[in-house]
Image 1 (tube, rainbow, N blue to C red):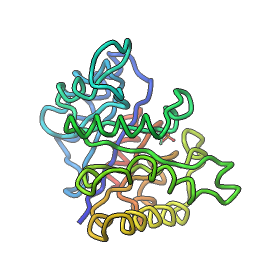
Image 2: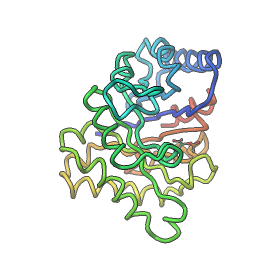
Image 3: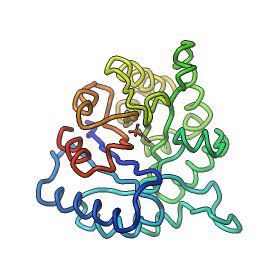
Length: 253
Ligand code: PEP
C-alpha cells in the first residue's frame, strides 16, 4: 500500500535565517502534531541549507534532500555538488530532471541518466521529474513526450533500480503559473505512467511506484488532487515556502 508523499521544492529561495525560521517552525509543528501515519514529508532546500535542514529533521519529522546533483563522481567540476556530498549530510532524496534544470541548464536525457545513476550509487532516492510543455499538450503529444522522457532515463535501468525511484509528473505549463492540472488530467496521466511501468517491468512494480503531482499544487487544491487513485502526493514549489500553506497541504494529505 503506497503512502502519500508531500515534498517541498524551495528552488532558489530564502536566506539562511529565513530558512532556519521556516525549517524549525515546520519541524516543531510536525513534532507536536504529526501528520497522519500514511504521510511522508520531504523538504528540498538549496544546497547551502542542507546541514541546517539535517538539524531541523533530527527528530525524524521529515526527510530531506537536494534539488540537483552532479553527473560525475568527484573532481575538477567547479561549482558542482556530488551525490556523495549530499549523502554525507544524511540527506535521503535528490530531485533530478526538474523542468527548470532541463530548460535553463540544458539537461538532456543522457545527463539525467548519469545523475540518476549517481543518486542510486550513493543510496539517495531520485525524485525524477517529467512533464510536457503547453505546446506539447495542445498538439496532443503529451503522452508521447512523457513516454520519451521515461524511456531515455528510467526505463534504461533494471527493475531493482527503478524500485527506488519516485516519479514527479509536473506539466511545465502548470509550474509556477497558478494553472493547476484538473484532477481528470492528473489522474489520466498518472494512470498512463503507471501502466507504462507495468508494461516495461511488472504490475507489482507499477503498483509500488510513487507518482507525485507537481504544478501549482496549493493549500486549496491539494486534497482533491491527492484523492486521485494514482496520485501519491505532490511536489510543491511556491506553496512550500509558506509555513501555513505547506502545513495545510501536509495535514490535508
Ligand atoms: C516545482 O517547482 O516543482 C513546482 C511544482 O512548482 P509550483 O508548485 O510553484 O508550481
